[in-house]
Image 1: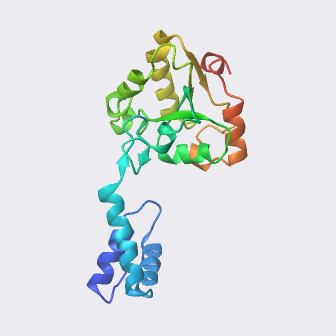
Image 2: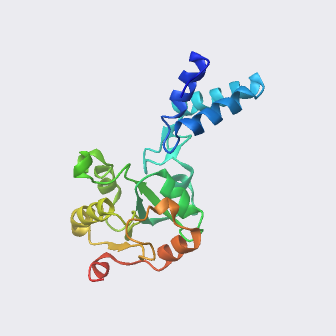
Image 3: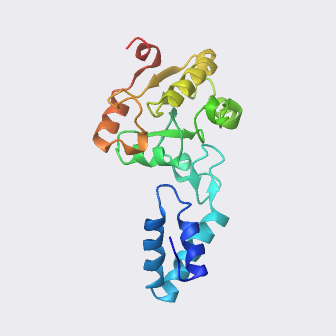
Amino acid sequence: MNFSSKLLENAVAEFSKLPGVGQKTALRLVLHLLNQEKDEVERFSLAMTKLRNEILFCRVCHNISDQQVCEICTSHKRDRSTICIVEDTRDVMAIENTNQFNGVYHVLGGLISPMDGIGPSDLEIDSLLTRITPGEVKEVIFALSATMEGDTTIFYLNKRLKDFHINISTIARGIAFGGELEYVDEITLGRSIATRVPYENSLSR
C-alpha cells in the first residue's frame, strides 16, 4: 500500500497491529480520525493513555477494575460460596450479561497451552487455591471455552481442587467444541450456567 504521508503510514501501521484489523481497515480508521475535530481525537488518545496507565486488576479475582478490589468482589449481594472460573475479562462480561449467575469470579488470565509455552505457573492458579477456604466456598464452576486448551486447563484444575472436598461443576455443553465463550449468545450461555453439571459427569459424555 502506497502512502502519501509517513505520518499516515505510521498511524496505519499501529492500528493494523490490533487483532482482526488489516491495513485497509486500519486506513479507514485513521482517515476517520483525521476527519474529526482535534479535541475529539485528543479525547480518544487520552482515553487510551489513561486506560493503559491507570487500569488495575482486582487483587482478589484478577478482573479488570478501577479499584484494588472490583465491584463484584466487594458487592454484598454476591454469593461468595460459588466461584466461576473464566479465562479473561471478556468471559466475565459475557456471563454477567446473561443475568444467570450471582456468585463471584476468578480470572485465570489465559489457558494452559503447551504449544504456546503457557503452563500452569503462568496463570492465576495459586491465588485461586488460596481463595478456597473450607466451609466458605461450596462450589467451583469451570466456565472455560470448549477448546483443547480449555479442556486441558479444566483437567489440571480438577486434579488440584479434588482435595478441597467442594462441588466441582462445568457449564453444560450447549456450546460447540472449539467455541470461544465470548462469542456464544447470551441465551445459550445463560442456560449453560443455569444447567451446569458435575465435572465428573461431563467426562462420560
